[in-house]
Amino acid sequence: MNYAIQRDRMVRRLQSRGITDPRVLDAMRGVARHRFVEEALQGKAYDDDVALPIGDQQTISQPWIVARMTELLEPDGGGRALEIGSGSGYQAAVLSRLYHQVYSVERIPEFSRRALRIIRALGIENAHFKIFDGGYGWSEFAPYRGILVTAAAPELPAPLLEQLADGGRLVLPLASRDDPDDQVLARVTRRGDGVERETFGACKFVPLLGRFGWPT
Ligand code: SAH
Image (cartoon, rainbow, N blue to C red; front, side, top):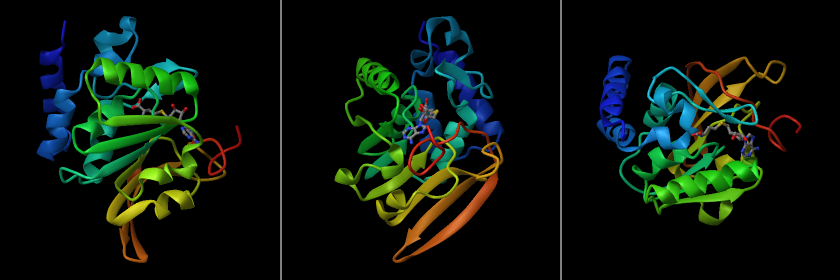
């Protein structure tokens, strides 16, 4: 079963819920999301507002928020992207269709290894994984045209801003330090030495842990 019909339906629902970028919709149509969840949950993989468990209290984000964050990056068909929080690897797979190279950092070794295994099994060669505290980014391949953080941070981790290209966009859930569940989706665009900040409504992500997040 390759779930192509379910994927088409998912994309139509994403469109009806306001996702408009055709490149993003194509990328969502192109990635076999069910491969990133365990077999018993594969039937639910294309429900657009369900976050699915991937173990260790972590989840693969619902398709709508994956599409929304990706759209806010405004990918223009090239360059390098950085993702913080590889999780299942699904978001990295979506990004791999929109950027030349994708670099993804995850703190839980088993997640990173599983993401790599699934991604390579799908024939994706331009997504790369590292096990580390993602708040530090991945300086070796900076600057990035797009940076996506898929765990909520109490503030923008400084290394990520340093690794953002001029004109590049960084999308992240920002949380209140007192209440990690009080979150807003934010976008930071670098303009020379300055930055432009925008917000896009409430969201719900697991907390970013480590040096630039909450204590582990
Ligand atoms: N993008 C993922 C979903 C991520 S869930 C997907 O497509 O499936 C958030 C992930 O962020 C979890 O896997 C969690 O372990 C990871 N995470 C939390 N804090 C982190 C940190 N400081 N560095 C790297 N990864 C982190």
